Image 1 (cartoon, rainbow, N blue to C red):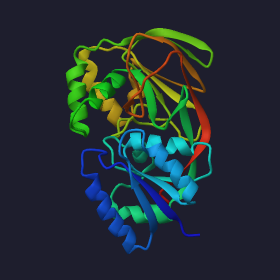
Image 2: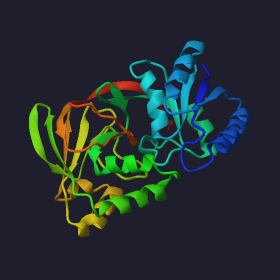
Image 3: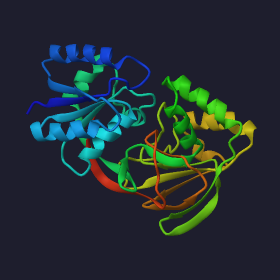
Image 4: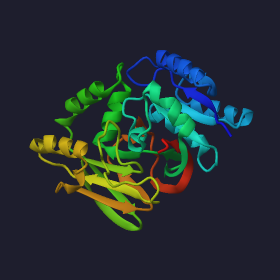
Length: 293
């Protein structure tokens, strides 16, 4: 049976004009005879309400049009259901879309929607909330907090924040439990990864698999400032696990007992973490449309 689609559109996602983009996309979809309806989000937290209404009204595929945050809000409603979901990446990082090679170019999207295949992927859980790419604390969480206050978006805004904060950052003390094993120490950052990257092809967990039922936990210990370029190259080159100050463990569950930081992030957005923080996976809990062969 031919699919129909319900688009949930974040008009201010990413650094570009998403309203103009979606207008052009709608014209392309009509040319192909693809059936769809759409609603725009008006504020943070609005997407889940729109998705719930769409679920009652039709059997259509839910499609988020925005960044990782928009995807998180929409997908969280669908976790544990059989309803197919699709995603059109329009954010600053687009980590999950990059990993799954989901296209963002308008000319490629009709084929993705019509020929895509449903794939059951794992879903991360942090306390009572979900994440689909990464969550964690340390330097990346500080940058997420800084980025959230910026009036501009995009890669260069993110890079500027990294440059400004890096020189004075000294890491954070933490006590956590990994599959029952205690671990304490000071870390530059600790990332719990379902997907293999933050976004922008920065691979924080190069061997992460969305269907293996495991979290990849990347520990980066404090390092000399002169190592910063090497760390950046390792992130972009998929070999961060080879650095001497980096360790990656695969686990089922994590509990963060204490942390000397006010900052936590979830799929790139600031997250208000209530201690203790419990992190786990729900295996193959989201039916996501990925490009067909």
